[in-house]
Length: 189
Image 1: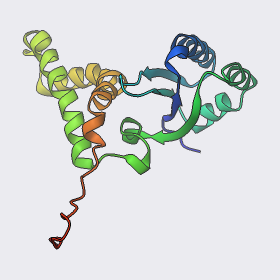
Image 2: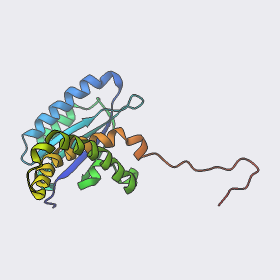
Image 3: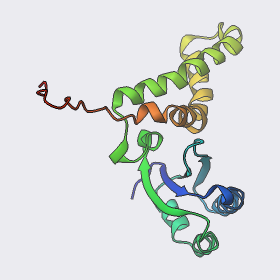
Image 4: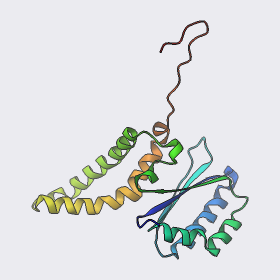
């Protein structure tokens, strides 16, 4: 079993007329999870206007605490109460940076992942330095760096990078169009 944080990513397709019921049910599940040792938090990304798939993330301290929650009677009862609210459930367990970029079969190339992280980190880091740079400027470089990374890492990990990857999802997972030659023309290789 792993001693590092683990994320359970859940995709649920929900009919638009059931969104409110689904959100109430989901909040109940998040509340149930807070009672389990090792629960680190959860979040929901609503689908874009042209889709119906919600992305839900539950994060636990390690595999053991996640398994305890996953196999609990309270979670089973909660899942039973949710039957009929969603279709095509899909669950995936991920660790580390992979939690931000989706399932292995549709994970974006590393260069796109790097760009998404940078696009999240730059404005947040700039804002932090504009807000606190003057106050921190008299401190030694190592202490300034320690304070800024201590403040920004949780914000980036739990809020800004997941938000950026959600907003950038169409670009991150854009499939390269395959060129099909016009009829009667040879394909270029």
